[in-house]
Amino acid sequence: MFPEHRPRRLRRTETIRRMVRETHVRVDDLVYPLFVKEGSSIHEPIESMPGQFRHSPDRVAPLAKQLSSLGIPAVLLFGIPGKKDASATSAHARDGVVQQAVRRIKDAAPELAVITDVCLCEYTDHGHCGILDDAGQVSNDDTLEVLAKTALSHAKAGADIVAPSDMMDGRVGIIREELDENGFEHTAILSYAVKYASTFYGPFREAAGSAPSFGDRRGYQMDPANVREALREAAHDVEEGADMLMVKPALPYLDVIRLIADEFDEPLAAYQVSGEYAMIKAACERGWLFEDACILESVTAIRRAGADLIITYFAPRLAELLS
Ligand code: PBG
Image: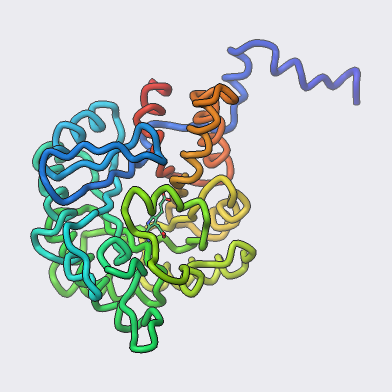
């Protein structure tokens, strides 16, 4: 007891603090999400995500080189297609926007790992993550086949890792089967296993033009109130062949990250989503918080909770801060 015990002794200098620090964020842990938009010479700012842009495929090569030279190991691609339809045809087109961007990135910076988001919401004219049935409901089983085709087309373009984010049941197994049958047994699957129906995706939906035109995503994404369900979702995906798991969003779900990290051995990613980014940006623009400190503290908290990888729009700035 005090006065023998004085925890402040180990907080006295930065050197001592460094020596006893328990959690470290490394540039190797970072994944940078990138929006690619059909067209050419596009470098378009995203209003609700200051500092983030939509790029056309012809503009991604220099960016890929720059990210790679910062030491960032991977990008996560989202596509904004020129055409949308009811069956998300452009999601699996050989010359789809993501497929084009993957080829350009792999040409420019082959060492940069390319992860592709596999979902239909950016490609459907109604903005839902799957194919609708006659009653206007998202049909799980009709969607699976389109997701599998989409994942395969990403793998054919050169994606190292495919990341299904649609939250249909059984998608990891179907994607694994499709990849294996076509000779892509080395393409890994990062499953958005635990993805909540979160309001913090708002800015992303502006960025990707993917807000649902009616209803919401609560029929397929998880209820923010649930946590036992997260264990079931992760267990299913591991059984179906997921190589890595994800929890999303990150900061409001640190308890879920901790739980999944404790229960599963698979590498775990956490996604600091668009709304988390926008909150920090907005407060810092007003001078109410300091941006670099917010970035470091938030990702440290996400690591401390148990995430191995952090998908974050702050990745380039973090890489600078960490070097
Ligand atoms: C696609 C998808 C979304 C995000 C990642 N993949 C949007 C959604 O589910 O509505 C959100 C990412 C972010 O907010 O940064 N389904």
